[in-house]
Image (cartoon, rainbow, N blue to C red; front, side, top):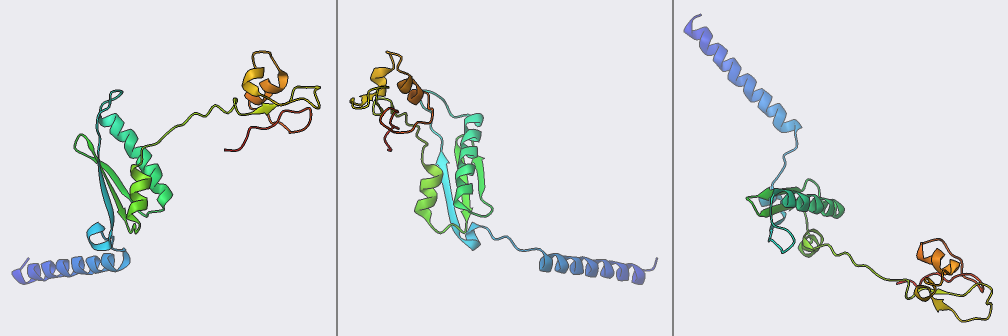
Length: 168
């Protein structure tokens, strides 16, 4: 192969690569990062408590929880990943409300138990004019209406039926 043919082949190869690059650039959307597109980046540091330490499994659970919360925000293509041994980096492109993002993603979950039995009232069976009594006080006596309310059975309010627990 002569030098002229070899140079021509290399030139065609370069032109082919340029054409292929142009096709890719024109057909694929360009994804901009937080630096160009805007958004929010939140970095959280895990801290050990008396009940548990910070390890890879606790960080993975926290990432899963944060991912579920971010999905509720409706942010397209969020990136949530661990960094180092105790940090979680949350990147939310196009997020406009920083306070809402911080509140939704980083708030510690809280589970509250409410003893509604002490506030639920039941009218004893056969006592149409009687006074309603708290469910908790009637349970030891084996009252069927109180037991039904305590076990979560649907109830109807009426003169001889248990009253539903109050709305909270």
